[in-house]
Amino acid sequence: MAESNVIDGRAIAEQIHADTRVRIAALKARGIEPGLAFVRVGEDPASRVYVGMKERMSGQLGIRSETRVLAENATEEELLALVGRLNAEARVHGILIQAPLPRGIRAARVYAAVLPEKDVDGFHPVNVGKLLLGDPGGFAPCTPAGIRELLVRSGVPTEGAEVVILGRGDIVGKPMAAMLCQKAPHANATVTLCHSRTRDLAAHCRRADILIAAMGQPRFVKADMVKPGAVVIDVGVNRVPDASAKGGSRLVGDVDFASVQPVAGRITPNPGGVGPMTIALLMQNTVRAAERAAGAG
Ligand code: GUN
Image 1 (cartoon, rainbow, N blue to C red):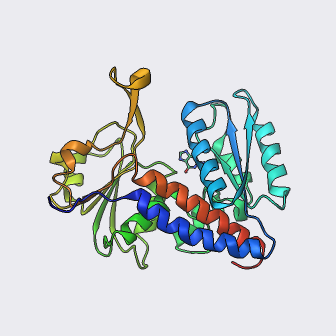
Image 2 (image 1 turned 135 degrees about the vertical axis):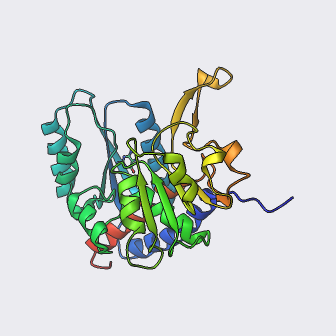
C-alpha cells in the first residue's frame, strides 16, 4: 500500500508536548509551577468536553489547572469580576474563557479584560494587533498556531503557496489569514479568505495549494473542490444526527474525508488532526506565560 497521506495531529502534538515537558521541568526546578485557569459560563455540552480535555492534558504535563464555572444566566459584570480576580492571582499564569459565551455577554469586552500577558488564547486586542503586525512577542491563538505547526512539522511549504481559508471567524479564519500572509519564514503565502458571501467558493477552493476549512459546515468540502495534490486541513467540529451512533449523533468535520482523501496530497483526519494541536499550543502558550512571569521568557 502507498504511504498514508494522512497528517497525524496526535503524533505531532506529542512532539510539542515533549518540548513543553522539558520547559515545565526547568520551571519546577526553580520552584515555579505553571498555572492555567479555565472559565466556563453555562453548561454547553461541547464546551464542557473541550475544557475537560484541556484540563486533562494540563494534569498530564504538570500544569496546575483550575476551572471556574458560572451559571448560564451570569451577568457580564460577574464574569468581568472573576476575570479581575484571576488577573490578580500570581499563581495563575494563563486564563482561558471558553467560547462561545451566552447571549447577553459581550465577548469582546470580556476578552479585552484579560491581562494580555495572561491571554494564552490570543484573543485580547493587543495580542490580535501584535499578530497582525508580525510581532512575535504576543500570544497567537492556539488553533491557527497549531495549524501552522502542523504544516511546518509535516514539511508543507507555505512560501508563495496559494492558501484558501474557508471561514472568517475571530478564533480561526481571521488570525490564520494574518499569520500566513506575514513576510516571515513559514508564512509568505498568498491568502484568500472566503466566507458566506464569497462568489463561486468552489472555484477559489480549486486554486488552493493549501485548503483550510474552518466554517462549521458538516462535510462541506467535496472532492471536486480540491486540486489534486492539495493539502487539506479540516478544522470543523460539527454534530450531525446519526441513527447508528451512540446517542443518535456524531461529530464530523467541514471536509468530506472519504471522498477528499484520495484527491488530496496530504489531509488531516478529524478527530486526530487539528484538535490535539490546539491543545498542544495552549499548553505551550501557558508555559511561555509562566516563563515570562518568572523573568525567563
Ligand atoms: N472555542 C472554540 N475554540 C476555542 C479556543 O481556541 N479558545 C476558547 N477560549 N474557546 C474556544
